[in-house]
Picture 1: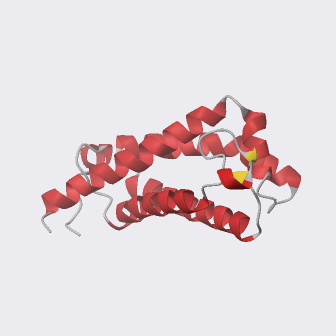
Picture 2 (picture 1 turned 60 degrees about the vertical axis):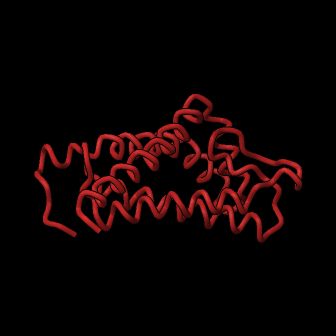
Length: 158
């Protein structure tokens, strides 16, 4: 695979993962109580800790998303984004395995829903795909139109 193709894949991975993270954070940041309840609905963490994570998570998503879209500190942001997606997959999978009927709260909302309204397989597939975008960027952070290239130069070929 040529370096040009890898650069395009990197750009697409950055824009897809970054765009999703920015959107996910933006729709939750103005609704802190809803975001807190969404994290608490997974019933994994102590109630207070889940509440704090619900407050912090939208801001983390926005920051990582902006870094990815700009192509700044791409290796770090890609790895952090991939790790975040793995945590989301684990949370969704455990909710599914335990028979919880909740909305993941990924794009606002969250909390209890009717069992027939759950979309666990689709949510897991989406987050695995996004984790793969982040993994690509960890492995090869260089891409087109990135601030990393402008500020730090093009790295040696991967």
